[in-house]
Each structure stands twice: as structure tokens, then as C-alpha cells.
Image (cartoon, rainbow, N blue to C red):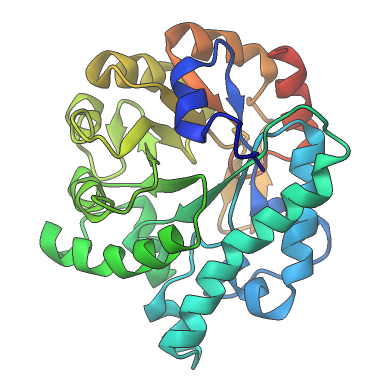
Length: 308
């Protein structure tokens, strides 16, 4: 939470000599606290059922060293809520609540982290997240850019009206959807970052990263571009490409590096996310650094300690 005299999120990003630390995976922190997220709404279900759990998860990351809490609205859409019998007005209230829960967490954490600005980024996941069928890791939904813009704009309007410090347009699998999102945030008055989910040096839909990052290069609303929900090894290469193509600060928050075995319903392998990778990301242009799936408060604490 920032005071009236404190620099805004966008101002800090433009002038900070050190990275701004993001949080880690919200879902894994909620699951670690015993909450069942096996639902099409994923963590968004707790907006209605257990909002206090979301506050506690945000507080854990702030206290670990994060300066940005990303809201539980990733999978929260009017269409998704409608499938659960939640009407438009109630859904809009839950979207706005996701931002307020982040604010409440910042208020609670302030006394324990004096002197550090705490921000709230309102998460907006891709169209495929609403489908809850894995499409968010493939893209190519069969929709036009205009149709995707019409899907995203109403939710972004509600989130922006709740006055977050930033919009997190995240886990985007497809450059066409990125085009829609860049159009959808125009005129909202809230800075945004755009981050792709990638495989190697391509989006999940198969476009070269040079092409994908260029989508946001001239957008005034997009203040950072990068990647999330990918392997740390892929992030190593992507950061330099994003900085070179856009000239903007880079955002990077990959997964732990473990691999999900769908047949066994278990995670395999060892984590490759580590604080040691951060210096390379910083040197390549990253100014927003955190973690995504399976990256918890302990890893964020280690990351934050390494950037002081």
C-alpha cells in the first residue's frame, strides 16, 4: 500500500535501481493451508467461500519479502461465475473484492515491513483459463482478436475500477490474445504488465517471442513485458529477448521447474527455480521478478534477500 506522497507503481518501475519483488504461486500457498482448489473456478472460488484465506496467503508473501500481491482473479470471469449460478452484479462484486483483499493484506503487513511500498496487481488470466480445460497452455481458441477483446474488456473494466496499482495480464499463450489484451486495457487508467506462457523461445501457440513481445512495444498502458508460468530455463532466454524487442522493463515469474505427471497426478523432478538465476535476469533487463506455480514464500524470501 502506498501513501499519497509515495511514487506510484509505474513511477517506481521506471526509476528503481533494484528489482520489484513479486509474490509466488497463490494456489500452492492456499493448498498448503489446506484449501481444496479442485474446481473450475480454482482460487477464485475462495472469493465467495473463504476470502480470509486469500488475505492470509497475500500476507504470507508480503512478509516473505514480496512488494506486489497478485489477486485471486486469474480464473474469475463473468462467464465462469455464470456457470456456477453467480449473476453479473455478484460476479462484478467478487472481482472488485479480489483487489480489496489484496489491500487488506497490505494493511495487515505494513507494520511488519516498515518502509517498503506494498502494491496490488489485479490478475487477468487468458480466455483459456475460463474454459478450465488446459486451453490456456495452447491458445488458438478459434476466436478473432475482436472477439477476445470483447471477452476481456468487461472484466478489466471492473478490476480497473477497483483501483489496483497494476493489471497483471498473465499466462497469455498466444500473440493474438495479447493483441486483444493490449486493446482491451486502453483508456482504463491503470498500468499493466503483459506476460506470456512459453515453451522454449516461442509462445505456447507457437509464435516466435520476438513477434509476441513486439505486440506491446508501442503500448503506453503496458509498462512491462515478459513471461510467467514457464520453466526457469526458458525464462533465462526470454528476458533478454523481451528487453531487446520492447525496450520496456521485463517481468519474469516462472514456475518451480518441477514437471506435472498427469497420469500419476504428481509432481516429478527437482525445482530449478533459485535466487541464483536472478542476477542473470536482472542483467538482461528484468525489473519485476517473482515466482509462479509451486514457488512459495520460502523461495520468495530467498529471492528478496538476494536483491537487497
